[in-house]
Structure formats: structure tokens, C-alpha cells
Figure 1: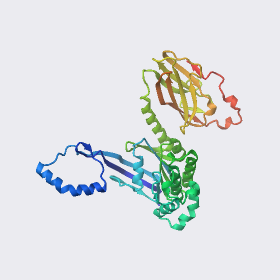
Figure 2: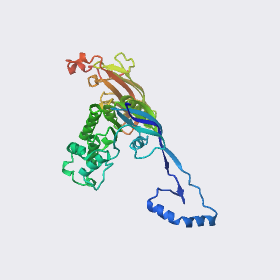
Figure 3: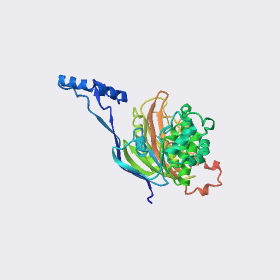
Figure 4: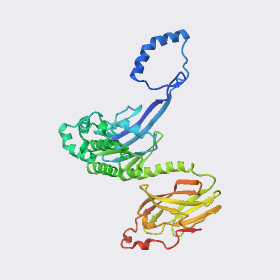
Length: 416
């Protein structure tokens, strides 16, 4: 038996957008009523065309848009694979192709197993049916027997926390109730492959935590496959073993979840940085350095860690600078600002070395986001000034040391 659960081979999806124009206006997709009316009037239009010697066909060019093009990757059984990318990269189109909601223009995808998909809030629900009836309906769609669905019914309702409303038509549910019930059904009716698109975007923090735990359980504990699309990089890093990065409808990278997330952050934030710098005032270089001042890409846990900042001030008054440290889950840990260090920034070039409170930096990867500003405006904002690692070589040696011993006695901002 093959260990491949999903095989995607050069799949592509083409759309015709803004396609046709008639009478100077943009063509719209037609309803059944439009088609009937158009058909009824065809003989008269044909006669007018003959009399006038043919119609004007200008403006009838079609615009071709490839939402996906030449996408290929494999997902093994039991893996949790995260699909990430910017809006419009093709993530949702890919999941619709894998769920057989729409047909590919070219290429193919092979799915080995029963698929449960959660693509949008309430997908697969009949609004006039109650929550109870929709549970049985979704189970039947998955090919399950009534007895199988009944055996899991109580667990589904408890997970979704909709006991009081289970016999209410779902059209009266809030979006949160829709989401909880939809996820509970998809996760508990035991599809061999679970396809999830942005399920964490609507729920509250407690529900998000519950969803992550359930997806980890069904993958690690039950050996089922999960394909997970999200903009929440923290969730992707925590949940997924592998990642696929989509850009402009094509695969930009595949690899571990951390590698793909890092690549996405680098590409996204590098693009943002250019839009924020102006007036030649801002950072010219930022780097991590060790206690001797040598540039480094990693620190050992519990040992001194420093950030060196080079910046230029050409405009503004009472200019300040600062940076924020984010961990690998993209959670902000610490803000360091020149104002707190008693630093004054006059016109010209400056260099500072900032000692980090390294007792806060547990083993993992970190990035530095920073800005230069005054009371009137922001001169430079960069979401990715530099990055570094903290490794755990001496983690065991740190046990038993007091937290006071980990603080640095020197001033945190030192002008060089």
C-alpha cells in the first residue's frame, strides 16, 4: 500500500475574468433567466446583424487568469501539511480542486482516502435543517451509516458547544456556532483526509486552541492526513510537519513548516520594508553580535546576546528609534526603545549596541522588527531587520541559577 495520501501533478486552474464587454459596459455572468431571454431574442438579433452587415465585435476579448499553474507536490499519510501564501496566491482554489468542488483546467490530483473538507463557514450545511439533521446529512455524504454517526453524535455536539441549539435550524446560528459545528463534524466523522481552510480565522482563542489540539490528535494519534491552509503562521509552525508556499498560483517552496514559514515572512516583510523608508532617515544596518562585538547568527541559551544598530538621521526633530523582538511563533516578546535608554539622536550617523535580557530568550528562532520616528511621523519601519537563533547547548547547566544572575549590570544602550 502506497504511503501517499494526496498526489498533485501539474494541476492548473484557468478563469476568464472581466471577459466580455458589450455596448461599452463590462460583461457579467448570466443567470438562467438571462439565458432564456437571450435565446428568445436570438432570431431577431441575427436578422438585425444581417441587415446591418454584422455587429461590432470590439471589446469582446477574453482576459485569461491562471489561479493555479503547474502545481505539483505530494502529501504522505499521517502528515499535517500547511499551505501558506498571500491573498490571491491560489490556496483556496487548490483546496477546491482537491475537494472536487471545481475541475482543474489541466493536470490532475489523486486522493487516496475518504475526504472531509471544511472550506468556508457552513460549507455543506442546509440552512433549513437543524444542527442535528445536518450532522446526519454530512455523515451520509461521507458514506457513513446512521449507526456510525449516532455513535459519535454526542461527542460532536459537546465539542461544538451547541447543545441548546442542536434542534434549531442552522440558518439562525451565529458564524461562530456555524464554525464550531462544521469543524466538529469534519473532525469527528473520521475522514481519512481532512482538508481545512482558515478554520481558525473566526473562532475565539479557546476554540482555536481546541481545534489545534484536535487536528494534532487525529494526525499523530489516529494517523489521518491533514491539509491545512492558514494565514496564522504560529498555528502552522505549531501544528504542521511540512509546508507548501504558494506565490502567484505556483509553488514557491516546499519543506519543513518552519523553513516555509521563514521564507514566507522574509519575502513578505522585505517587500513591505521599501514602502516605509523615506527622507534617508532610518536604519542602515542591524545585526546580532556576541559579547566581543563579532556578528553572529546564534547565541547559546543563557549567555550574553547583543543587537547592533546603525542608523542615519537626516530630518526630523527629537528622533527616536527602537525595535521589537518576535519569537518563532511571531509573538512579540520585548520592546527596546532609545527613549528608555536615555539616548539622544542628532543629525548624522549613529551606532548603538543593545544588550538583550537574554533570560527571556528560550531556545528557538527570533526576528527583529524596528522603526525610526519623531513626534510628527515615522521615517523608517522595517518588519525584518535581522534574525538570530538561540541554541540549547547549555540548557541543563542553567537549572538552579537565580534569575537575578541572568541580568546584565551594564546600561542596555551603549553608543559606539
